[in-house]
Image (cartoon, rainbow, N blue to C red; front, side, top):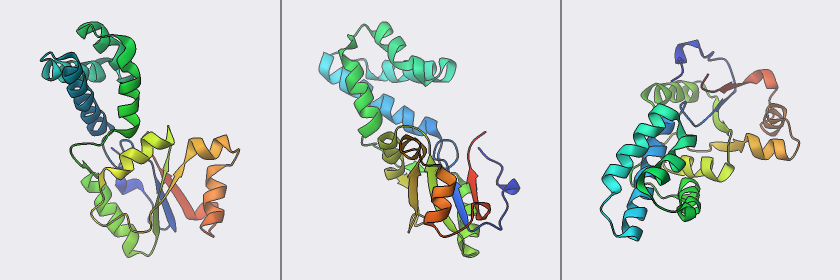
Length: 182
């Protein structure tokens, strides 16, 4: 979580990363793990979802998200054929629960909007995955007129994100700030 007390309040545009800035990334991943475990349980016809979710959570917390699928596949003995389903769920899964903004972010958003400044998202990673996260956030009204920019998409097009965003919003680069998790 970021320390919002260190964010200057004199900018015209505030760009926010999604993961661990707006929402806990873990909240998204754990719901995807739940959906995947339910899918495997249904497909295999064996009661294993509860144990699988618990195992996936432990692997994520101890070894990181990159280790989750392989270790789960090995532990529960299912074929690698499920990897495509896991990856598809990761990008397109419809979450059973909303993702909630950090309380500090809601306070910061209110302060930014009171000053007449704007809020946008600048996020790194697979654009479809990041957009899926954004769609599941409970914005509580803060999402009005929020634009989203994808670092990977801009980079792929050889566009420098900050100059592009500043130009598109008719401001200078010094009038914007990017808030990301360190």
